[in-house]
Amino acid sequence: MTVAQLKNISKIYGKGESETVALNNIDFKIEQGDFWAVIGPSGSGKSTLLNILGCMDVPTSGEYYLNGQLVNDFSNEQLSKARNEVISFVFQYFALLNEYTVYDNIMLPLNCRKMSMTEKKKRINYYMERLGIEKLSKKKPAQISGGQQQRVAIARAMVTCPDIILADEPTGALDRKTGEELMNLFQEINNEGKTIVLVTHDMKVAAKAQRQLIIEDGKSKIVE
Image (tube, rainbow, N blue to C red; front, side, top):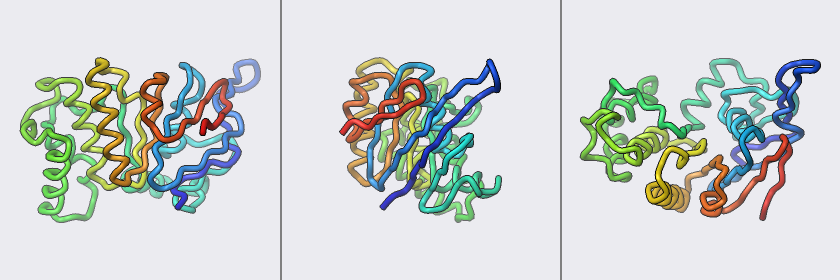
């Protein structure tokens, strides 16, 4: 089943002499259960691609389909709903709220869900235990390590049960050993059926994925 598809997607910033082509006619299809690594140097268009997939940015031209629906036609309300229910992000620098506990950070995306508090707590506790951070629930981000913070960020991404997890340089702020542990965790999550698209410039990280999409100068090439 195709969960996301980009057709001839281009993204251009600026006009005239200041025009920058971030993406140039990208065709990209994501099937349920895929684990993609998007690779390329800084400024190649990787993050732009991820932001379009995550409904955080819109293409200049081309079509984006999410679960068969044309995202180009989405209202702001539909885009917001997609970001909360269909897609989840994991960021390089974790994007946790320092004044909140681990538990409350994971709760954040569930605050606007019409679910009982019992069900919310059940989900949060499940993913904290799944990611080995259940003993950190009352701590704040500044009180735990970078690797633990990234696990909290992954739990926050997974607690909504999204169709796609988008990870932007998730190992970039971690040491090599912790980064390897995190990539092994992503592989486990993928083996359980989760669809993952991960942006990286590190070929060792990319090698953990099933498939690779190379972005260079806004153009793409699939590595089988």
